[in-house]
Length: 97
Image (cartoon, rainbow, N blue to C red; front, side, top):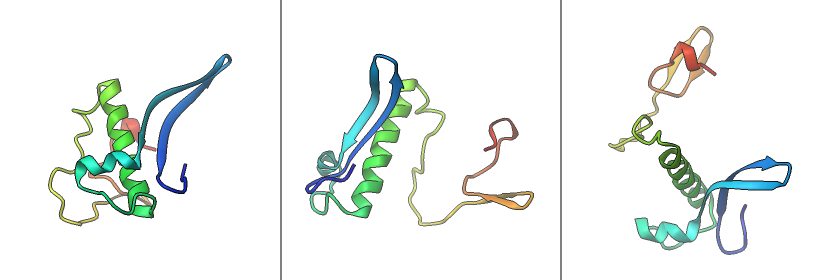
């Protein structure tokens, strides 16, 4: 959700008695990581979503499996399988989209 001052990201699921929020992040928290201005633009939305995703991975215990990019170099990594291109390091046949 984009408000007039910040971006809010939540991962939720619905139950019969109401919604449950698994994790949330908002762009005001990005100041901890050095981003103090421009908290409602496209880049802030991306960073807020990434922060929320990392929190979800940590909550479900998969943060060690999906480590993320530790060295930022700007290179786009892709793998071609058949006629489709996947933007990941490698495609696992058991978990292929």
